[in-house]
Image (tube, rainbow, N blue to C red; front, side, top):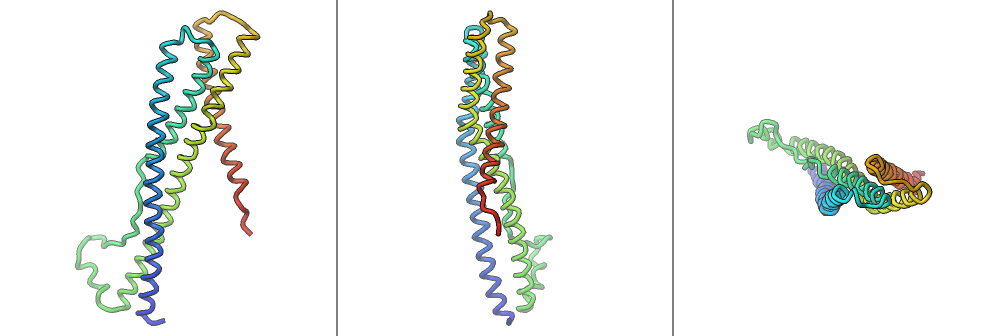
Length: 217
């Protein structure tokens, strides 16, 4: 293959690689936008529930205290997951630039078609390297977003129901005076139920998703 033909082929390859880089950049923005949106739901809700529980702790039934504490624990985990999505991650551009940032350093590549072909090869390698890094970062952000959504949509209502029902059954079977020890125990039990339920739901969700993936031939 002649040098000019190789240059044309590399130009086509770089155009395809650029599409991947643009896709990942767009995906980063979309994932961050979703995480920001859900943070506006989970963080204020967590603060509001904690404030309400703290203010009304002496008058709340045990079922509401345990259920509310379980819900607050799930919202805290959801907030943590959505915050992890927002952590600073550099989007690789795939652009090859001289180390010294001087125009003189690119004179070598302008001398002949072969030297320009060498530059095209280096640019293609840099773009592929950037694509690989962005794929990994995109997958990481997607995992954290999915964990936050699962804990918010599935774990939170489940934990609240389990906590409330468990406390209701306990008070029905073992009626006792609502003492300070009972408040601490109820709050701790609710938090434990919320954390445990979230862990089980997230783990189970990803196990199911993994099992549904088609196996490679």
